[in-house]
Length: 184
Image (cartoon, rainbow, N blue to C red; front, side, top):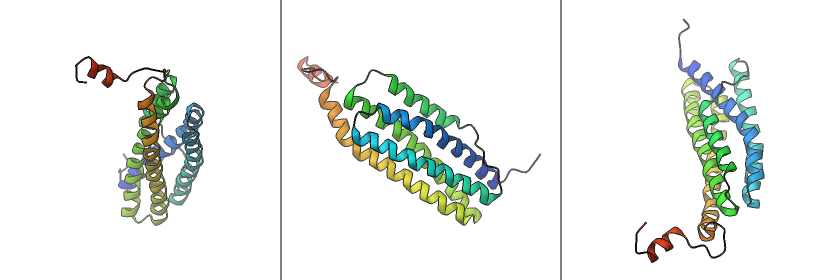
């Protein structure tokens, strides 16, 4: 049995991330198409381009390590993408759909931030400076995307909340509960 080293964990994690990025290349266009906010749609489209760059950086890292470019099924991202698909199949409309899409997208970003943070730390520790530099750039871009989603959510969540179900005259659950004398 071959000895498992930190480098083998590093390569395994990179393969997992490579597959995760490939899954996102397929999912992001669907999220963009479902978004009703032009700004959110544009954000998803821009992140699609970034995601392709992230995958190509991993390919460069594999080349530098002398490893074949191949992914390993990322079950974590598969689950997160499946949850995002469920969100898109709900009958949410307008800002409510956009709020749900942002929530799904931030799950993706947080997963990627955790994964890229780990492989970046491994690369630094092992003295893989080129890999560390590429991974650090990707990690920072993932954090920036998460922050953009957070900033965008402030307006969209407010619109979703004010709009209730999107039906004219519909009161919000808290308002109904307050009139009924209950606290929700």
